[in-house]
Length: 263
Image 1: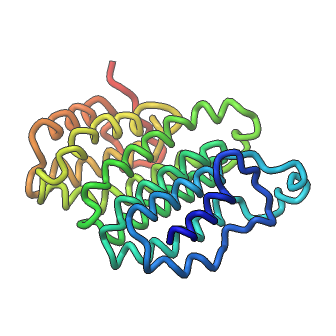
Image 2 (image 1 turned 180 degrees about the vertical axis):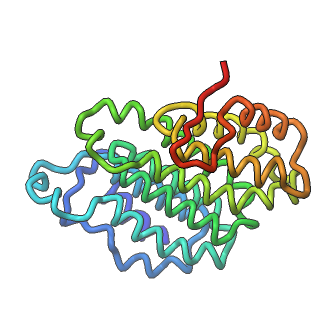
């Protein structure tokens, strides 16, 4: 493994300029069964470095028609994804790798959403073993949606896909899986409960998602999974979440209804 990592770092270390010919779809991924959590962390760091650098000048003419660099990176991590579902000790490093990759690809919103979708899928496939990684995933989704208004100032990004809606859809999927477990085991999810009100407030009220039909869906999740859920959630976050629901429109069942803060 030492020689393998030496080869990887020599090719993808800081200062490396990406060229399409340097494919990340490497046969070295066959070594994944030997990976430790530390190996997965190193792999995630390498891939994030690759995705954060500018393409080389010689590749600019052709790179637009090719698959994004982040897609090749996700291909590498997909193999580790499958291994992590068998060896749960790899899960923390996998979530770290996927969320770091999303941050590295933040200038390409669709690529960042793909990385977050991979992290959400990993969580949904192994929610109980990933309990302590749920806050990491929530923070990544929160950061992604808060970056959207800044990106939308660029004309090119305004013409892109609806990444805020996709990010909200991922949040709803994660909450549908995680909230029942968080109610059952509040002590194991204390960090999640502590951060949940702030995250949901952003999705309910702040642009670009706040005030939209997606925000109304967030209200529905709070009602069904938190306020009406059995067993009851911890009192402090439940009280804060109830205040959020009361601050917004209560008509979440009508798609055209939007949320507004009560003045």
